[in-house]
Image 1 (cartoon, rainbow, N blue to C red):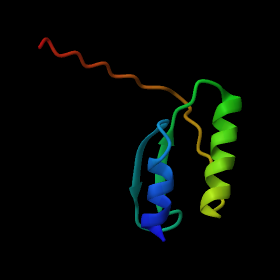
Image 2 (cartoon, rainbow, N blue to C red; image 1 turned 180 degrees about the vertical axis):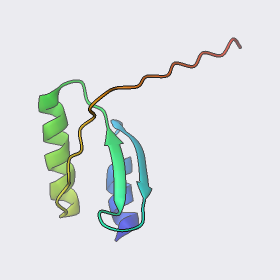
Image 3 (cartoon, rainbow, N blue to C red; image 1 turned 90 degrees about the vertical axis):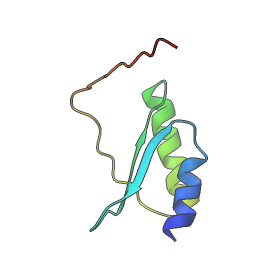
Image 4 (cartoon, rainbow, N blue to C red; image 1 turned 120 degrees about the vertical axis):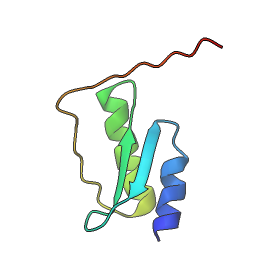
Length: 71
């Protein structure tokens, strides 16, 4: 079942990370969307496609690290 849900998550370009953790919930993922409305729609869509309740843990503070390579 985890592989099936991972395939669903990986089908969304806004999902930047997803991984399995011990305990419950056991699949964690990050989702970035351009607006809160789109974010809510995507979460509802993923929940519907996976038949799972998604626990939302919104960021409290954003940490942005920029990396640039001179190639």
